[in-house]
Length: 594
Image (cartoon, rainbow, N blue to C red; front, side, top):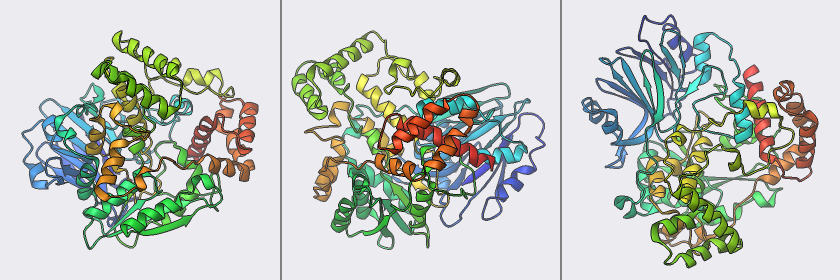
């Protein structure tokens, strides 16, 4: 679903008439208009067949997207939503999960409350007029078309992206355009806008109801209502634990009339990224059709013309691989409605690899009894000396007891050395506030390992806000609220055992489906693919980066960057990710110039 709307506290905006006209240039059929108090909302779909989003309404609220009943594990009925007018937003949203933007209008208080679900797959961008009115939309490009303005680049955002990577922050790549991050609440009045987290990621920790469930049961309950309206279901199957778990669960819950297939894309030239043999084994066990796609003829930085109906809202690493992304999307079944699912996200919520600080969590929860065995598990997993593990956990315990945990973007929290080609002026423009609002509210008394797990969760959420194929969007079940809450209900030291990470997921899938395929430890690597792409397209890469906006703005040293590009193209890995962030930001800016 795409949408655009206005919240007007004063006179009706002169932009009102443009809302439908702008949206209609994108939608398959004329958009629908809703007027509710001081809210005007226009919505429509890029594809009526593929898009399963809908609208729920009652006397004081509107919700867009997909809503599911937490208690009954099914689609939330419109008549039930209609009966929720007397409840406040906390009571309403306690009953549902899904992909949604929820807008509650309090006419007496001249206040609007807007909430984005915990995953944030239906974005909410907005800009504020001098008179207090708000223009909002699902896509930044729609906002600029309504405004009739050219975008002005927010260099603070882009410098922060280069420094830190993706993040679910309020800032966007454009001046005066803001985003409501996932799992957050935006309170809007004529004179005030405040954003704060709405969902507590630790609400399920040590919850007795969560502890009675297992991973397969939670996956099945969550997947079933999501896939229910689709004729085709396709899982992106690497053959690893996460995608394989989805394949086994989907096979067990799909309806007889639904077609289930799996798509495995691999680079035949790069052995480390080829897991086809494992994907074949999963499909043999489940009887699922496997679509085998060799994308070795498509490498990062291959020439490609961006032809999506809407420009990307943010830069993201996938922009350097648009050609291969297109090839993959063309092989997803599309003759009728299709749900395309990815196992991405399990690494984040079940922690691969587990935090070394889980040993601190064990000490804080259980004391010294049994801690020797727990320490042994950690050291064996990382093959690190006991002294180094003890030293790191001693620091963590000290920080916990004295509430001295460093802020998320504190310089001492930086793990990798910053490339010398990033100039000091860029560091000054980057903002440590380039984080999800949750970090402003987290208590200093969160267990060290659990804090690492929350970090991993929000890094995962930041990585899925980009859609390369808006007609058949990718769903990420491991980042759906019920599954996230299940994973966060565990103590961090229970997430690995016997040398295996993501242990609760592995054991549950193995026990339910009597399979050994989920016990493999190895995982493919994509570094070699990046290196091949740079080597093949070296002149193109040098042109994008060395003649790009960061160099012209004096933020990056041209000669130092050139040296890094040549080193990566010849097999080096140092500063690979800062380079990818820079290159993807340059491609993003070029797309918006077109």
